Length: 235
Image (cartoon, rainbow, N blue to C red):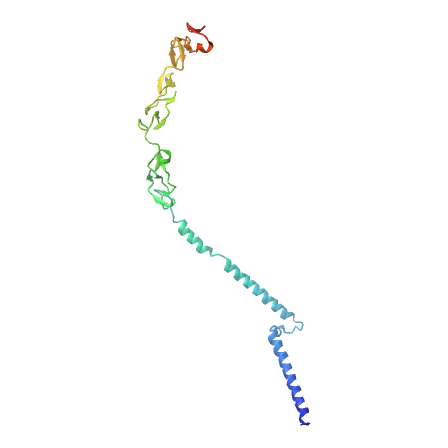
C-alpha cells in the first residue's frame, strides 16, 4: 500500500494536467472563434477587425431588412387607386353626359343637366330647365313673365329702354323721346305738351291746391305752405 501511493499521486497529477490542458484548448477555440483567424498577428487586431466587420455587416443587414419591412408596397397601392379612382365618372368615360354622384347619366334631366363629364347641375334650383344639356331660362311669355321679354329673357319692363308688361316684347321708349310709365311708353310731361303742371309724367290742370302749377312745371302742394292755388300759383 505504501508503494502504490506515490504511483497513484503521479497518475492523478498527469490526469489533472491533461484535463487542464484540454479544457484550456477547448475553451479557447469555442470561446473565441476568431482567434484562429488572427493569423500572424499576435495582438488580436485581425480578430477584432473581423468581429467589427461582422458586427457592421449585421447592423447594415438588419437596417436594410427593417427598411424593406417598413416600406409600403407603393406599386400595388397606386394600381388599386387607379382602378377605383380613375375608373369612375370623368370626361373620358362620360364625354356626352354628366357625373351625378360619381355615376355617368345622360345629362338631359332638369335635375341632372350637363355634358363633358362635368358635375351635373340642378336647373330647377335656379328656376331654369335643361335644354341641350345646358340650364336655360324658360321661354319668356305671358305665362312666365310679368314684365316684358328682351332677347328671350324676362325683365322688369319699367325702364325707358325696356318698357312693357304681360310678357310682351320690351319697347325702347327713349328712342321715341318718351318715357316708361306703368309698362307703357308715354310722352314725358313738359312745357311742350302740358299747359298745367306735371306730376311725374302726367299732365294736370295745375289749378288744385294740392297740385298747383303751369307751363309744364312740376306741380306744387300749396297746402303744405298754408296757401291756396290761384292761376297756377300758391297764394
